[in-house]
Length: 265
Ligand code: GLU
Image (cartoon, rainbow, N blue to C red; front, side, top):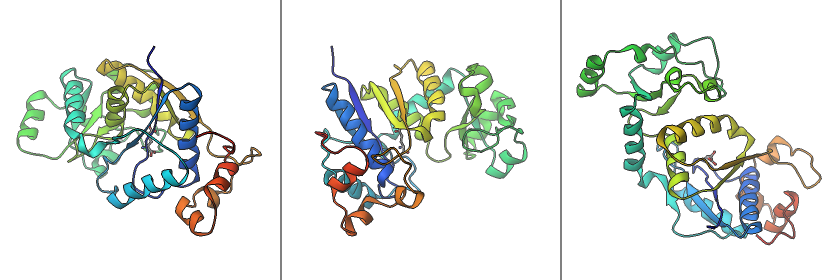
């Protein structure tokens, strides 16, 4: 049997904090417990927010924590054509449609239902455009994103998202398509991530079904607590690892605080 594969997949739009440390340590420990593999993946498809110096800082912080991961690291911004190709497959099967609405237009015709991110469900204006109109507008170069056609998908679990945007303007991808493409391509067997991302899992499972990709095991961990099981204060939880390091906190202190002392990874 092939070895289980785990991954820690941060987005380089801020420095890692204790919550990231917990997730990374947990993935590495779970991988070690089953003699599995541990990968790090950089999720930088949001080019407006991602910064190269933060990628370097992520590697530094993870090394400081004592983690080791396989090389080379997959950097999503180097793989846009692969995500676009999956987006095209979804378009060919009628699972997604281009949306030309500005943010304001979309909000103006939104439905009175909120998705898990607190955004109202899209009203579906662009779903009703004729193929001729869509082609005309695309040929004209009108900017557009891509929305999933949730009614057509008929997926009760993912319906909480409505016709959510799965690929942004100018980019041709999004976190959602990139994550399912890469999890499949890298053979990820176990996705271990925070409860805050749990609602996205229904969407990821839907994309996997549509694209014929395997569905890994999902485990959503509690947001961090200290070794005694108490919730950390918000300010401590959001303090960056480098700030803690500058204040004299050691990697050992962090492991202990997060319940990983004595752990091999
Ligand atoms: N890149 C996401 C984040 O930093 C995590 C994605 C995932 O683990 O699937 O929030």
